[in-house]
Every structure is written in C-alpha cells, then in structure tokens.
Length: 320
Image (tube, rainbow, N blue to C red; front, side, top):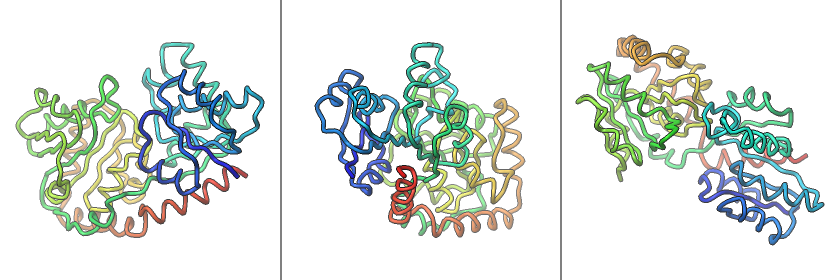
C-alpha cells in the first residue's frame, strides 16, 4: 500500500529513518501555500506519515478533495504537551482552532515517551503507540568509561529563543547558584548566553568531538520547559552518566524507574539548586552503582536497527 511522508523544512533524522523503513515517499513543504499546492500536485496515497502540524494540511486537503486515506502523526514535537504560544496554549484562538482541527483528522499517533500518552488523551482517543528515538552514536557512547568522582555536569542542546523549550537559561541560573559544580553546555546558538553565566559554567556552542566532554562529566542535566523525547537523555544513560532531569522531559519515566530522586519537579531556581546540591552529596559507591545500572539497562536498547524494527511494528498496528 502506498505511503507518503510529509515534513516541514528539515525533518528529524530519526523520523526520516522511520519513514524509509516503511518505504514512504518523502515530500517537503515550506508553508501553508506550498502544502496546499503539494496536496493538489502529488499523487494520492493510502497512508500519510506526518511530522509537524503544518504537514497535516496535505492529507487533510486530499480528504477535502474526496480522497480516502489514513493519517499517522509522529508526535516528536510539543503539539500536545508544550505550554507555550507555539502550540495549543497559544493566545491566538484561530491558531488553537486550526491545531485542534489537525488533531481531529489524525487516525493514529506515534509518540516518543509514555509521558505523552496522557497529553494526547486530553485531545483525542485515536490509537497511540510509544516508539522512542534511536541513538545514532550508540556504539561510541557504549565505549565510554564514565567518571563518578566529579561534580561536572554536561548539557547538550540547541538554544531556540523565544521559547527556549530546553530551559537552557533556567539551567544556567540554577548552576550559578551551585558554585561547587562545573557545568559544560554544548549546543548551537548557546554562546550568546555566556553573559548570564558565572565562572563555573563553560559554554562551547558547537564542537566536533563530543566524546571528550562525555568523558569529563559525571552527571548529565536536562531541565526543559517541555521536550517530548530528548535523545540526549538516552545518550547519557548509554554513556553511564547519571541523568538529572524533571517531569517536563519525555524519558523521565525511564530515569525514574532506576532512581526517582533524579527526576525533579519544576520549581524555582533556588529550590532546584538545593535539590541538585543534595544529589551531588551521594557517596561515590552509590554514584558508581547508579551509573552502571543505567549503562547496563541501555545496552540492549536504542540502537537504530532495533528501534527501526520496533517502529515498523508500531506502524502496522496504527494503520490496522
């Protein structure tokens, strides 16, 4: 049966791999007008695999034109859970109406984490399946022997104002209040945040060799405003770093299963800093045990071949 993969601008590499696995024909759109144009020009397909809300315009237009199809959405964005103006919490009632109209037309949804299921259920009761992302550099990360005797934290992620959904500015303010820790931030556009950081924080923007920094850190920290499925948390587990995150992060449920104290509830900068200070007081032996447990549990998970096969099964369940 014919499948089209519709995405906006640049698709996520994991979504691209999953689309290839189900032999979907890719189509890029760059806006509403282009989406409507594509809907008129491209052939009709039985199934549409969709990344980004805007991409829903294509199969919905096909339906309006009288073409029957099934629409499966990959929820690797903040559509259902992010509480910013970017999505369903927008102050623009027209935007909210359109997004709910898009959701109404979804026949199935593949999400990144268990956390998202409840978020999806607030808006629709179509079938939902969890299929996490894979980690491209898994073999390299598996070779890392983590250090457990430092107070060095690592964060990797792009700074995207104005929403800053990864919470990088908040993270800097938190670590400004913990002078005994060292924080290394790596990510596109992050260099502009240097003016907010104290001496215990190093901001590197983009680096070629990430392995060097994975080896330096004991902890990986990610305190987002919202993120559906941060791959860096999975990477940290594979590398054996001790992940500290909050309940706004997808994959927090995986962290919680191993040590619930590593998942923080969103709080003020000062309160979060106090929680982190308590965590870094843990004895070296406990740190070592936690590190080894994460590394062991991730050993048979998150490889590209394995997760692609899982997605193929997820896809087959969603389209039946």
